[in-house]
Image (cartoon, rainbow, N blue to C red; front, side, top):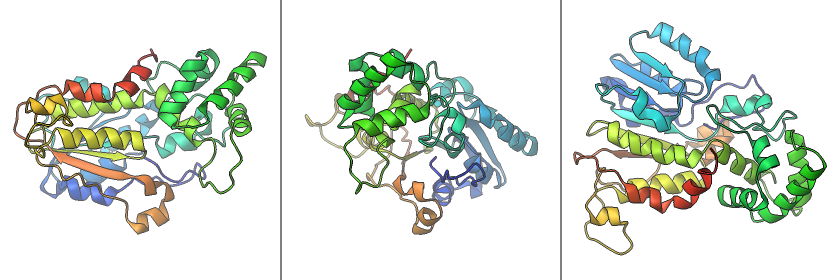
Length: 338
């Protein structure tokens, strides 16, 4: 849910809203699930169409007031739950046959702009990075995890080549005093990284991404969330996911492609689940939508967004166990976050 974050007054831009509406086709009415409510952009847009109902989730309690206002205007058509989408099965009524379930992954603009939460490099507050309903903070990880654990987190979730050096400097710094402020971590990373003024991204980006993913168990949430969405959505319903970085997109792409009607014959390169004819989706073309040039101009962070969607087939749901095995590296690493 990446949007401009220059100031707290920045407007909320739901990413690829036009594309979401086009894929959902709410003009005919229908039931929709907004798994990442955030600023409420998708939910409000869907509710503008008559005969639509929306169930929305968000792990962040700070969006509750916004959700209440929408509920007041749409009392019988909108429900909100302060819940992670890995618990989708706990909040979705079995009689609610969803026409589309939407996931807009990553950090929200509201979270990024709130400097007290420690997501932004510009913050001088504590290093929290908790999106909501997480058991630990980035501050705790930095001051309590051992060298190998920290190195694995930053290397695997951030794809940071200089993870070892960054971690060594983290260990040195925390021996002197507890690392509590975002500015302290920024100084450690800047000290550790080689100077490269040609790079467009901030030197802290990869480490911050890695810590955020781990704190919020984002890959576990994604895997569990899209599996449960598959089980709960009606036949012919659409699962729509907007990703922002390569790990997310790799997971979604693999799941959609390998559990669709695409592959007709067994191969050693196909997951064992496929050989057992587990088909959950109609034919998937391995295509994705990107934001328009106008949207990128108005909302530059949206440039990394990819929208993928699949249509649920009529086959009975069979749990795709080997999907989780494929991404065991990420899931096992997040499992130490308890």
